[in-house]
Length: 346
Image (cartoon, rainbow, N blue to C red; front, side, top):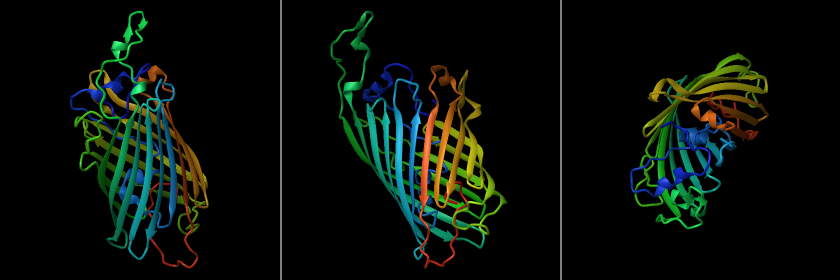
């Protein structure tokens, strides 16, 4: 089973599995611009800009299929210098299968920053999430509603469960960083909450993320523009490994900034791994373009499907990110460390 959410052309028969009394597993949404949607990536990023920051992020996945996968998130965070702490609020909305299944999550985050030495610092973060999932049974189709000659017109006899479920979810993360290097780890769904509409049959398995990167500055940096970074030239290799349940995936690639222009590319998959004979762990190649200026940044990425799902003409996936980092008050003279992570706010 690959890490991404799968659906074939035609009706969403796979959705009927949520009613079967067997052990089922669900997986989290993943973003191609993982470094830009930082509060979703790791709660330790709350307040990491050392200023106030707002982020809007949206992903439209596989629009060529007879389905609908649209995920939108909005987050805001702030850093309190006297307390060495950051707080964040994130709202995420996910819709699957032409609004057949939808979910809304509201997360609160707290992160504490500890200076380990003159070169290294560590951030620890916690997250509490209230989640609500809804299902519309009117859109579901089952085999007994069809015959060789077409629809029978009769209602299905499958027993339906609840149409709404809510739960609390808890996560944690840590981040070690220096001026140019960072390494982070996060664990989500520590309490493995039940998200099933039909009894206790679908618990979210814990998800583990490891992120790392290094920023090679070719020109500029803090000496040229400490607030906007508009004159920077650098390249940043990044890696993001994630594992949940029986699935795992790796994003690896590089992005660069030339003054205000951002370009990059990633590969998602583990090409040396096979799920079974003839099915390799390949998913997509990602290309990125964007720009940033005076605290505002915009990024657009496109996923080129390289797995066997490409035979169904998925039309790839689209993602946009809009981030704005507010300038610090003029009276603030305290020099603070800023994460060198590739999240457009540097």
